[in-house]
Image 1 (cartoon, rainbow, N blue to C red):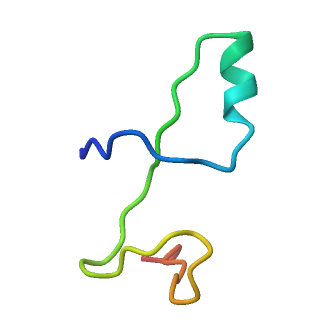
Image 2: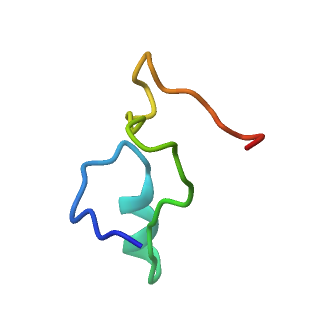
Image 3: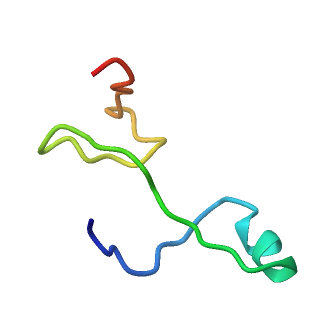
Length: 49
C-alpha cells in the first residue's frame, strides 16, 4: 500500500464526507511504468488481467 498524500479530485466526495464519516481510496494495480491519470490518452483498462 502506498500513501500518495492529498490529491485533487473531481468527485463529489467532499459533499458526502460533510454528511457522514468517510474514507476515499483507490483500488487497483497497473503494470510497472504505466501509471497514467484516468483521462490520459495513454490510459488503458486492464480489467481482464
